[in-house]
Image (tube, rainbow, N blue to C red; front, side, top):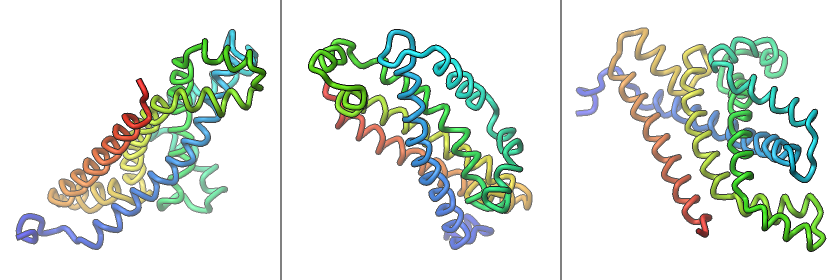
Length: 222
């Protein structure tokens, strides 16, 4: 039955492509979470009226975040080819896509982190300061716990964007479902392969959204 519906589809090839997409999304997602969280916290702390107010630092990081966030991902991949080749040794394969994925997604998540931290009640921060809490304690015990629903919601959105980025990267040799859909589906006119690859990508997106919404609901104490 499946062979009749999808005559050109090879299950082993599909499984390998799905694993490559999950690999790229997971590794880039973890790096994006850590880097974006750090950048977002710095942006928040150095903004006007905050604990470590510093206009030069805020302006510098803000400009960098805005620049990398604004560059279309397909162009970013091309711009980073020399860096990727020097770091990874090749511009093909799942590992070669990671630098562009991280550089493209981390600034996006950093802004979401900054927005999430701004939603924390200032009274809670002031109460912690009045009790003698230092900056690191306020970050770890107040800001991050209080903003955790927004942080999880933000990384969920970012992970979904990363899945889309992996599909674009796959079209130029990064592997994964995007590569399968483009090379085996589009270029060879195998519409059944393109359809199945798209459906698997959608399944991954829906799974990420479901898990993210569930975690957000658990952490949201309102």
